[in-house]
Image 1 (cartoon, rainbow, N blue to C red):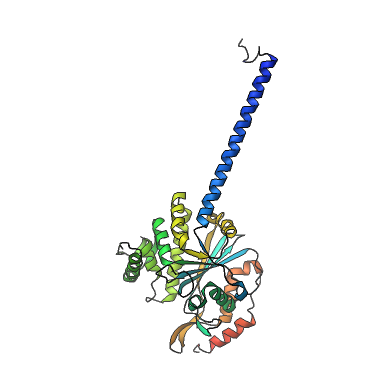
Image 2: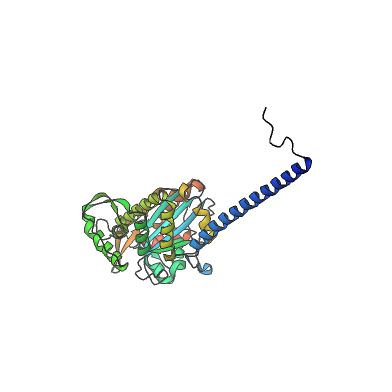
Length: 355
């Protein structure tokens, strides 16, 4: 019969052995705690390093027009894609792209609404003009106020990016797959070559149509097509198609790709989102899905105010009702009734709509 290992151990030896074992356990535990701390500290430092790359500028809240909607489960962000060729992310540059990203934090649904930049609206201090001019006149504060006043919104959060950063991000994702029409090819190459030249890169022409993969410069060229088909209306459809394709590709990307993409794009972002909000949204980003995308106004007429071509909501009052019902009715459970301010603006715009 085999003897047990410590069968003949003396009490003194046993006490010494147990004490040594206890010390070893404490050291192992201390090492594991230290290792966990290092890992946590590393993650925190990594995240803070990324967030510190973002350019932060808050809005002038004393001059920010808002409408109290009392929405608990929604986080709404207005994204500006500026027509900038020198990393000018603040005012004095036009917002070529304006997309309202409405995030339902409860259902994890994202709805995208592109606003046509030629939409005729009231801009505080600048009478009535094109919606896309508001950012140029007064940066994010005036642009957000213009959206809030004309569309009964309570936006106070924005993100501004330029075309170069988006092109580079798409390249890092390995391109995006979209449906390209034959007539779009020369326009893609015209705008895409321009963006590539700004970046000091060689451009590869698109030569085929159908469902194809576009690189970053080609995708931005595709997104910027305006003088084709229904002009700005089709252009916003293309922009949302590229965003959808990017989001789908991002969800399948490895950490290394995501890291490289963040290093490239974050320094070219201007926002007033604080770190706490960014982290809260980021932790569940892979659980979100884009469930709807549309252009606004939904119902419109095109016409002239003076000599300027405009997109005229028909009517603004009815479009605002539809906007709120599509985005927020799931929470409110009732049809939206626009404010008297929207009613007044709507009445002014209607005089330019031909019957």
